[in-house]
Amino acid sequence: MHCLFELALITMDLLSIKIKIGDREYPMKVKPEEEARVRGAGKLINEKLRSYREQFGIDDKEDLLAMVAFDSMVAKLKNEEEMSSIDSTSDAKIDALNQMIKSALS
Image (cartoon, rainbow, N blue to C red; front, side, top):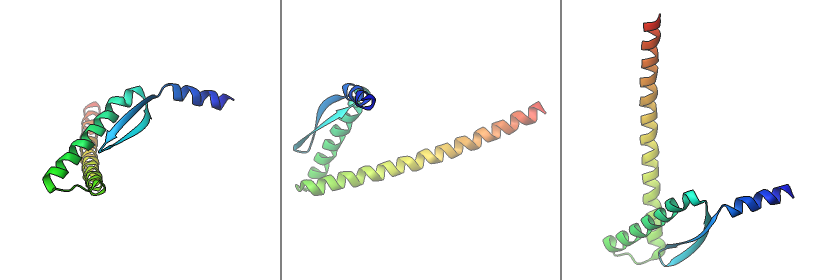
């Protein structure tokens, strides 16, 4: 019973929304704080679908969705690599500052 109550509380905190991607609507439940991000993602997908359709003259929905998925994954991987590089640089600078502080305090 306790688990059922927790599930009910979780469900009550979710919003029921519909996102249109291409020509289809997808119902989903999202946290209120995620709604804008989810809607924004749907908008970006539709913009990319339209762009690829116009740029390459492709009308096949499956091909267009595959291109958007591929493009999104490449962008995600690039972003992760850049973040990893920034993290490494930051770590190195923090280590250097720590060494300078240790030297100054010794």
